Image (cartoon, rainbow, N blue to C red; front, side):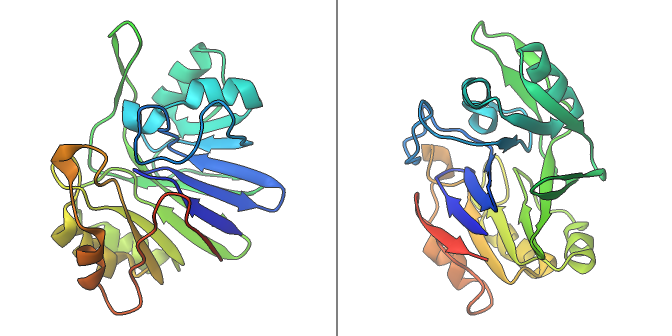
Length: 226
């Protein structure tokens, strides 16, 4: 399994013959190295409805005929835009060709603003557990620190976790360091920072807060194998 990071909260996974994108905020994201007009994917996974996470989902999914897996209300909205969607809700899991997805809690908010400025309610925000090829990846989405992260760590043998560190809208580095201890992931990658002035952070300083060998700073285009 090849996993690459592409700025903000954008993650790409290559599992067998399947390519999966998580939260493809590409256009307007100066941290991202991908091109929304040429990136290919089979599946898009969304944590919540904010525009800096839904991003280019509609255009990418239509061009690739990709399946979009998202929280129910967000999936329903995207289905109304002509996308092929699979709705899922917190605590629920579903198996696909590439592996199994389970949604976790995320303490945040969730809405989508369309091109006309209309705000759409998009349900509960979520984190994503992905089980594939004997590995477990956790993308926490946008969240503050909450005690159930301990349960997520205790109940799942997490190989790799993507945790937000930007502060203001999500956990900051100090809370994310606590979250890292609680989820007990073998590797932790900081995300959701430096895209906007209000979420400027030093990812290397965050990694220094973690148990030695746990934290890994990934820059846009960096990849690793699990």
